[in-house]
Image 1 (cartoon, one colour):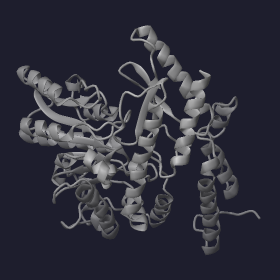
Image 2 (cartoon, helix red, strand yellow):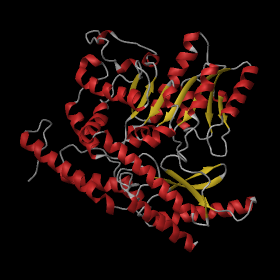
Image 3 (cartoon, rainbow, N blue to C red):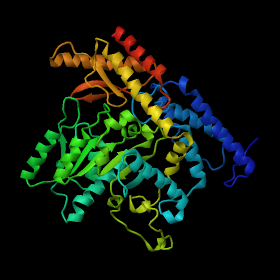
Image 4 (cartoon, one colour):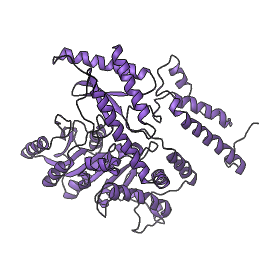
Amino acid sequence: MKHTYPLEPDHAEMVRTGRLVLGRAVDFIESLPDRPAFVADEPDARGRVGALLVPPPEGPQELSELLDRIDAAAGQAIETTGPGFLGYVPTGGLYAGALADLYKSALNRYSTLAAAAPGITAIEESVVRWIARDVFGLPGGSGGLLTSGGSMANFSAVIAARTARTVRSGANLSDATIYVSEQTHHSVGKAAILAGFSPYRIRVVPGADDLRMDPVAVADMIKEDHLAGLRPTMLVATAGSTDTGTVDPLHRLADLAAREGMWFHVDAAYGGFFALSERGRARLAGIERADSITADPHKSLFLPLGVGAILVRDRTRLATEQLSAPYLDDVTSDDLLPDYADLGPELTREARGLRVWLPLHLHGIRAFRDALDEKLDLATIAFERLRAIPELDLPWTPELSTVAFRARAEGRTGAAARRADERTTRLLEQVNASRRVYLSSTVIRGRKVIRMCILSHRTHRDRVEEALDLVEKALAGL
């Protein structure tokens, strides 16, 4: 039967198409344990991708055929949603988040101005306040904004720091300095430049042997900048670095920032929600002293990609440019709820709160806490087993759920290090060739390192043990 697909389908058609799409989604999720962790380059891959670069047709096409094409397109990818994805921290794809997205899109509420949809805005605001006050321990008066991810959250933090420490004091940015570590995510530097800071005023602080930002080194750099007539403005710490999951000494850095009158930002995009667990909260001690915090629910809350958060100690610090227009005069709000248009650059934005709110209320916080505790346990299991292998070097003990390892160098010379890096590269290639797991690599202080990031709610001990078996098997063949 040929369907016509009107823009306003009747009840039967909505049910039919909805069941078809939902059925495909369920089939996909149930297939994840057996799907390859990534699709290797194939001879016709470029041609198949190019075939998708076509304009839409004049008339309708069958939904089932279009879903077939989407399935084929989605299959040409790293399987970020599956249990074998151990390469990077954005994983997740929680089913309840997908349901929330579907319903949210059907409701199509505009919530950037609270008066337009106060109920949906209240749901989002409850999520923001829970993250700021319950998860991170920020005081009353704190708040924030859900963003597209950590990059936009970090950008918002830099803007808040710029306004609080320069614009409101009548100063300019020419002498304002920002301090980051060698492990700080590159989005912070990008945000600083976009916000008008000079790239020559971004100070990269040398880390200690454990890769954590060294407070003594920061203090020395600040002293030098004062002597040079510069103005230390912002100190950025990390709670869960991308490379190794490292957590900076937050209390000591908070002390330094307070002493110098600097804005203290903590990028907890990866590690933030580990604060839900007792162990994670202990490792993130001091985060409650931040002026601003970045957190990504699409990382350590396992949600579908596209939701981050910027939290600030004083919500008014985000209200940098409250511009309006006459056509918005009829949409007036009171002080019960914020207008998110005043807290960020977007006037049109999706109602991101439902993607976080529904899973939290459906499953309960305990389910997320237990899953995060499991990830900490799995990282410890992986670390202990890898550390027992003589051919491997594990320079850093995991603080969260990322385990970094490399082939051990046979000697201290540069040539020995290069040979070890070559073995590390071959080891990674052979492990990933199984297509049962996907690990990634990085370069830390000039050395090649393999990363095992354990953060999917679908990754359990059996898949981690399988990955470790593959490492041992690959090592035996090098």
